[in-house]
Amino acid sequence: MDRLTQIESRIQQCRNIDFLLAYYHCGLISISRLFVDSAWLLYNPPSMSESLIKEHSLTALESIEKVNQNAQLEAVFMLPVLLVVSLETRQQDVRMRIATVLKSVQSRGFVVASTYFGDISMLWDIFKSHDAKTEDAISITPRQIP
Image (cartoon, rainbow, N blue to C red; front, top):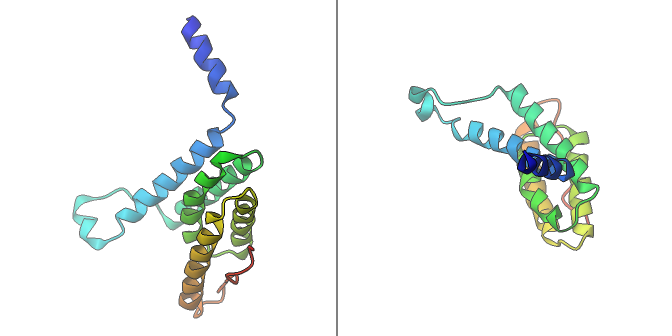
């Protein structure tokens, strides 16, 4: 029983559960995207609807924003999550939130955040050209973070 009390105490002290939740949500998105190819249809693979993927990506971003408020060394580990979230969004306000977190990570001395931002901006530009036929084409210019 004493051991259980110690574990509970440690769990309550864990301020980075949001960090783990962000990876959890991105993991679900990534697994779902692995099985998009029609070759998998025979095996009835796990999949999520686009609306559920969007919900998971926004939840992951919210978790990362919470972690970002107090992050130190772990800030650099938020970057892969931001990449997954950036692949799933077309809304400009969400893209600005991603850019804000990237800028915050870069301001902590992690120069690699600017590389991530360059890659993410390139992806958004590709999506922009793909979405140019639709009404909601959105893009953030690549050099807004520095």
